[in-house]
Length: 153
Picture 1 (spheres, rainbow, N blue to C red):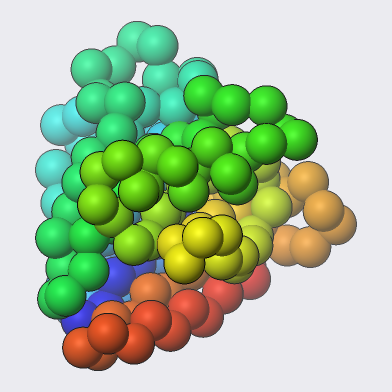
Picture 2 (tube, rainbow, N blue to C red; picture 1 turned 135 degrees about the vertical axis):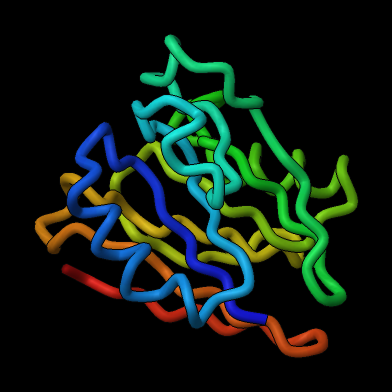
């Protein structure tokens, strides 16, 4: 199963449109980790959660997605402080029997593992905060295997 994972587009829909167009026929799911800043009806093909800048929209705070043999917690990640974010997200995943977390908020692409939980941040489609170009991720699930590929624009 191939999953397109995006975050923090902040209403910059031209960039997101190009990414979706490039991948929509080759993926099984498309996820957005929040701060989309776009009404819900514009991208009905995306599974989206609320970011801290999505206060005008009615996205859920978190979603659990079943994919292959995995359970993915989709959440923005602004619910905790930087110092304990990974531990907080891993705890939330364990509470919801998830083994993968897709989150955003930091605008930094990263892949970590805490307590056996895979933590994927695709970075920001709009503006990176670590000097790299804006980014998104492709998450591939095959049986119990998890493979992540970052794409920098």
